[in-house]
Image 1 (cartoon, rainbow, N blue to C red):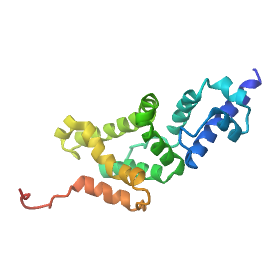
Image 2 (tube, helix red, strand yellow; image 1 turned 135 degrees about the horizontal axis):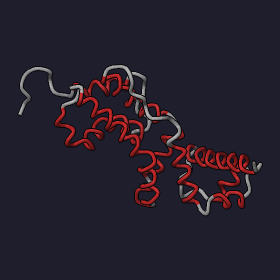
Image 3 (cartoon, helix red, strand yellow; image 1 turned 180 degrees about the vertical axis):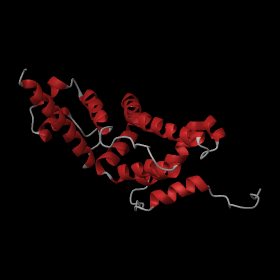
Image 4 (cartoon, rainbow, N blue to C red; image 1 turned 90 degrees about the vertical axis):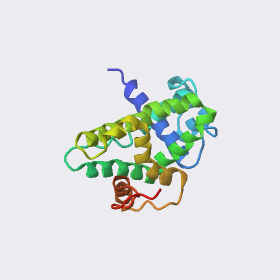
Length: 202
């Protein structure tokens, strides 16, 4: 077996980890250069260019690595509330992870600057997580824990479930992410904001 392949794989991982570290330390995609990345990773510029033909190609591999940070939650035994809590808690934990929260904020800046890169991030990371949540909500409808008519507007329902925690982790830096907040968010989702008894005010 050729001996170079393991070394190449190790170099690739090192470069990807370097990009993630630089972003976590505050660098934007615009700040990054192939030369600077190679220098920070402690490898030659030619080594980086042999693996990636440019920065966008490298960033696509970085995005693929983001999806490996934390596997999607597994929904096995337990109540629907337990499963929903697992999903919301996963968002909270990702928000606490400096590297991933920095990547998300950086990617939001790419929506206008680089729509192709944003689409790759959406298709690689966001779409998979939303699909997992959609399956959970469909299960909730099947067991009577979620009103079945809400399935007609699944995308909006997913936004409703994820929105509160994403807002706190992404757009409100410094907002409390204490351990009990996921339970409060889930109970608010399940119970709503209307009084439990009596007609709603017009």
